[in-house]
Length: 611
Image 1: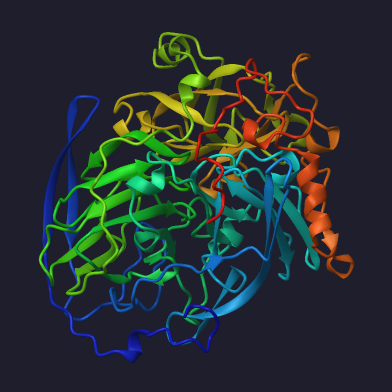
Image 2: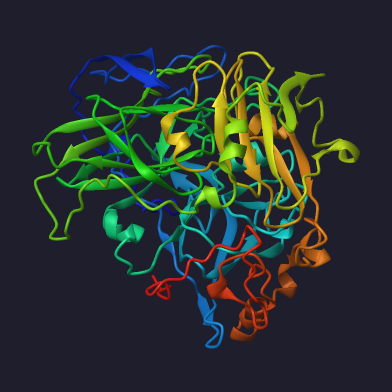
């Protein structure tokens, strides 16, 4: 329904809107690391007659404000592979997906608004693939600007990681090869140098699910809601011009941050969803450019965190709120079984220091308990899950203890600051090519990184490519309990905060990015690199696979046909099989238990790898 200007979108002029007022005033008490703190959630209301929002703290509001809860909640379409190949000998499989990156008019105000899209959708279609199947995703650039695609959450080889300078120019395409070695909610988005904020803001983002397709009794899909009740929940904020086009005043009002007055969920402003009396899973992704969120239910009800950035938690976390920085993901369960038909519950956004709140940015979505019920069996809220990837296999208890002790020296310290009108990391910026590499960890080395916010009242969601890390210590407020349950790839570094993280560097060697995921800061120019160096005893990685600029876009006129032979050639190269599970072995390779990246996922029912 969201594809193209001829779709019936149900804009504000197409429905008779009758609003009932409600006032919510909530005082929440929560506990972090055993210390109580108070959190004031500001008044939340739906006015009887909608007024346009005012500017906030110097950030412009849209001249016209859409009313909330008019449009029905929808999820992005799923993208199916157009070709799949399996090797009968090695049992390895690979799937091919194709995405055209192009402009597309979408109706929000009953008039076309131009978005930049993946296959005509913003957010882009969700790719869903079984763990241990590799994939080739071809991105064809039909825009007027260069693109680079990053699969966020994937330990991809450098040429496939979305290096900012590796631009696929208009009229070209690039095939990205991904390992899909572990379960999790990943997402793909643009990463073009100095253009990421604009191009992601225009709509270039989508979810990518790696799922457990086994039939094991302890597999994730046996404990969590049926796929019909496993839903994308992609949050973004936008602000519009008087001609209903997206406003991004780079160099002006949005020079340091971009905060919008409209909250979109899966591309839809403040949707409503009719829910059954059962448990739902929402895969929540903060795809905003700058805005963090404080997510909670209007009735103070419980939510259950079952997964974070990297994958599933061991112990399911019951919470009444959680903070979600830019690019962070939390998969949550909400149990609607105890509600009555007709009950209304709102998902809300609380106020955070230094983050402007427009008149409706405290609203996210509306749930209405429906009078119908599917015959699909429900599941109870689980108390435990097996973790996606046991961190104890990678990082010792002593390393974790050292990381959690601020009196122990860190291996490296990075200060996120501002100098000479630019956002910097240790005074370095991306455009300084000769000095952009700030660290050279050895492959398989465990390092403790100390992250400091020295830029005043700004949020810096820090993303370290390639690795998973553990948030071990945070100054003042401590580590949130859900951060202790699973590894992360983004951590929100708040004003004046200091954080210690610990990671094992690998499994690949080569150059990777490290940056603030407030995309305005990233573009100007809070991004540097680290270069993972090879140890003599480790397997050889082809030189072309260590250089992020080695595999470039190809002109569309010379586009290669995707055939079984083409996919078999990629599959048999075994580029990801040196380090990943032994049930993907390339011919002649022997499992090496001394390599810490070898994780044996094999079991009596693990061979099932088809959705």
